[in-house]
Length: 417
Image (tube, rainbow, N blue to C red):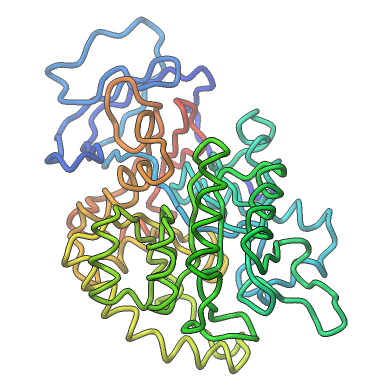
């Protein structure tokens, strides 16, 4: 696997004192200069000005931030970690299973080193990876996984050849009736899904449809949401690009609209009324277009939708939609996840609000805001140390070399100071 850069400062005990930092705590509060963050047993014991910092026991590991910026660990709420960047869409089934596993472990570590301490994989990643991270068997972001994508026959998730051969490597769960949708939810939950993913529209990379095409019907989506509710209230994420499918998804009760390229004024108003989150995955239109590596049909879809996406998401930002951070890596490169912050800012989001989208709001979407998303007393100590001031230049966070320290539950995972 890719090596994690470290220095002589390290801790495996979950206890740490970070000092001489500029603190951005993820709540939206003004930065605190000359701040101290005290971590005890993997949780934040104090985060604030040095004047109020408590005394620490002798021998507590210390990290001198040297005036650098400390922020909460970030989230990527839309990834595909079992796919390589540029790999033909849904061709995982053609790969050697062992090599796929080893490559996936590399991508987990690459993502963590970019400052993503929690990720949500929305199709293709078996739930065992999440358990392995939680158990400390492998290094990577803590994971929520959808395992497979629920799609109708011929829809965005159906990549079977005419002879029936499935190119997805088991990534898709096909359902064509309301009862089949209910059964599909039960199957992915049986296989360990933390979140249910449905296709409410066609897509960019899928060869049989267009983003404007509708996927599961509103009634079918409502059945999925109901079945997820019956199994612990699991959230439902909808791949939804065209306007009609976005409206079906929101009316059907999904937790989040993924991509949201056709999020017009009506859909935006409805999302606000229902409290639906939007995960724009702007990286797919800023960094996910390469004619040399894409089939022509895919490239033409991207070109057509790029301007539409920017206009609609820009309006969503202006009107205060509940936006969480997601990238759709591997459509864009793995390990450059926080470039998404720059794209949000390019469409009008203030740097502080972009940081909140990637921390506090994303934690709320995943139901983890009681323990993650902000650097506040009692929460898990996920934090990163960034060179420079991201409020002055949000693009700093998009360069992994500027993310010099990554701490996960008080354990230093990366340190290049």
